[in-house]
Image (cartoon, rainbow, N blue to C red; front, side, top):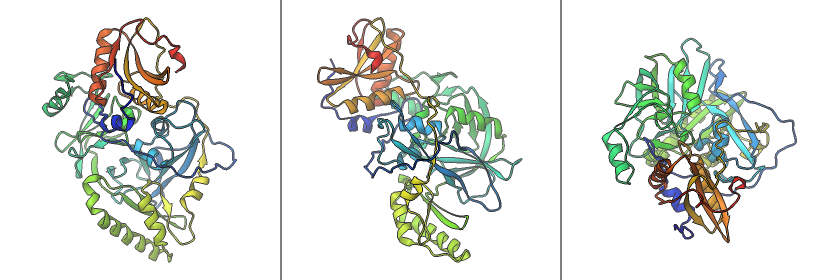
Length: 445
């Protein structure tokens, strides 16, 4: 029997790997910040999150919003529903646990974006904030924007100018030898070709770039969007890639940049958006800061305004991806968050996984045992958000908390899930035959 009482979740998260063509290379820890009381104003039912109209030389679009969580929500659930990535939601909510937020937690939705300093033509991908912008040729005053997942360190998404070379619906995944070796080293063996379907990490749409073998494609692991998870490809939520695939013609130019610090002037105010530079550029942080400072000085001079450089430093240190005003006497981040557009919770978040009820007649597995309930909830939530999902829940057993996965149709499917857990989390789960699962009312956990 597996005993994980001494295994902390931080170790699990540090070793957690998303299988297929993806790897979960990081888990963003959170730090406590003061809870901001939400003002009592009517709740708005929806907000624009993808399509924005541009006027003149406008480079700031969207608005900051907020929503309160409900029981069983995770920040990745909230992010996906509102068109954000994991990086967006966690950076803007450092005081909220990503996988186990308390019910009624106020979550900031950073749905305001500063456009990259690049021509408004075709696709512009800013890997620094993991966001794609599409400027359609037939609608020059419109921009569409979507969160993406990008290449992890060592498998970086390439920089530069290219184009869309080929569009393929229902693509097959021809597994590269390097990925075969990576999986085989951990006892998880892949076929030579993965056909289109729920097990295909390319999803149902792929657009090949005119450089190397890089793709913009969907994913069967949508909760990795907003992370450095791929072997260099650009990944999108399934619902987003379908829309973009149908909009973008072959030959569309693609420009890939790394702009962690972005400046914009809008409605009499100067804004700065700061994102943490990717590891590849971490040694250039000072130079990147000098570049954006030069741009801030230029915009301030044009509009005869004065920059508060202490604000600039705080925003860069905070690196939360939220466009913030930097002129003297401008609002601070807490005031910005207080004034965020308050959205009503939709009830069911888009794509939010719900684990099926596990009965004594089902195959299951005991994944791990913890002394802490919250750690068990975190692991169960992460299993539910694998792709395809591995249904799981935490179960109280005496003074410990077990993570039990299932139901599975048969022993074959249970073993395959166990193999994925071994590869993704480096945990050896114990298979439970029908009627071997804990004699508990699992549907309530």
